[in-house]
Image (tube, rainbow, N blue to C red; front, side):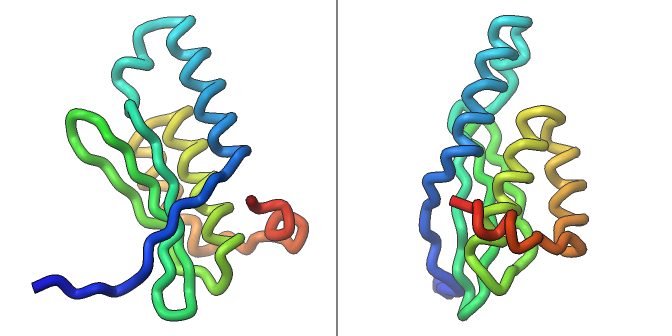
Length: 117
């Protein structure tokens, strides 16, 4: 039996996508580290009742995912997803899990929330 707890919607986050592309290009130019990274990086925003959270999903030989904290607004969850993706690309899976644990204490500024896409 499946229990549906929330609606998952994708987000086209231009800043995160550009950061991923630039980081992947730099890694592939410098060494073979790009082969150990994810082939597909996906940031989704889940809506659970009237709250939101980011989900970082990676498709590689082994599955990997990290959940951000639940947020009151979608832009806050998008910013969480950008941060999770940025840390994963630059530092790897352990760092993404570490950041996910600390994001619940992070309060996004009004300017950061307005700039979320």
